[in-house]
Length: 119
Image (cartoon, rainbow, N blue to C red; front, side, top):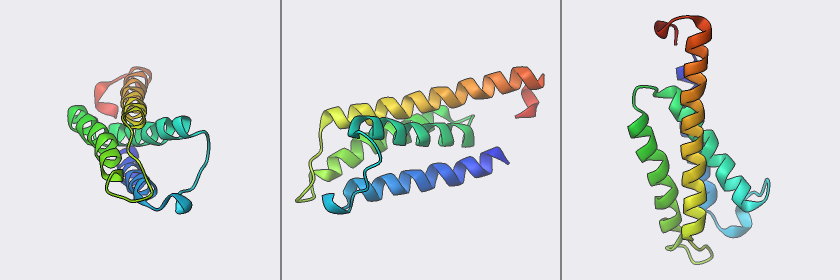
């Protein structure tokens, strides 16, 4: 059940991030300070996709980090946005942190539940 919900949350979050990253600057919602917001958004994607695909963490890492750098590069094609290497690095760091957190959570839950086959 956790994997199914995590798949939905992860892909919806990544879709929302892509929309807000490539939309006109005036249409972009702001929730917090930009670097914190970038880190947290990709952290959420990392956690969700890490929980959704626990046996494919390398694939998840490629998707999350690739999305961070790819979306920043795509901003260079929009007239009112700018892609910055620092923003991409912060997004990638948030995503990797989220993936690590999902892996840690699975290890802790596996230990508490008492068996590797439980998750």
